[in-house]
Length: 117
Image (cartoon, rainbow, N blue to C red; front, side, top):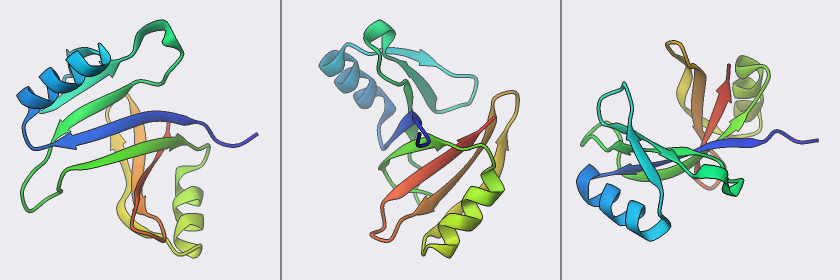
């Protein structure tokens, strides 16, 4: 069985407008996270995965949409992605009391996240 997609992220220029848009469009429950400029998207009992909306920062990262795949060994997965031609954007990075993540661009420039507890 393959690795599951466990989270998605939408990075936006205007958090207030994005909250209104996505909240009304998809009836998502949006909860402010402990991290500044990040909102957790809870999709409820429909069987979908949750996600987050975060604020883009000029010069740091542009608006984007990404999904995160759960992996057992984050470092090994980052190394394998790089060996297969990916460009690492964010090396393995801890999120205190939550887990660890990394991000890469695939062969076509799509941003993909990796997640590990």
